[in-house]
Length: 109
Image 1: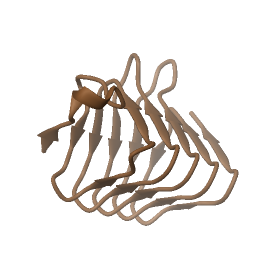
Image 2: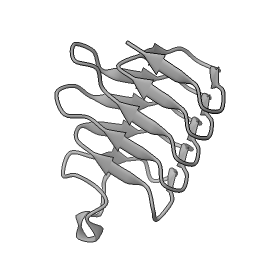
Image 3: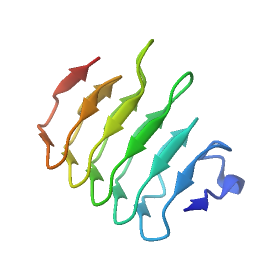
């Protein structure tokens, strides 16, 4: 894992991104967030954690305009090889391996 480059203002100081992950230039990532190997985060995605962590498992992809946020009492954990598709919202939920979240879907804690 590498610490994210803070000079752009797109990442908070606790963000950790694997060397093999792809993060689009317009993605915003703040709080205690860990993005594993071979993940991708696409245009205008927002990943934000205030009280808990967000973990995105190996090989998962977070597509355009996705919002990932923690719940009041729960972290957000996304398993390996998941696809979170366009405009979806994941809020304080735990997803297993090989999960597809469809376009505009909302998954709550």
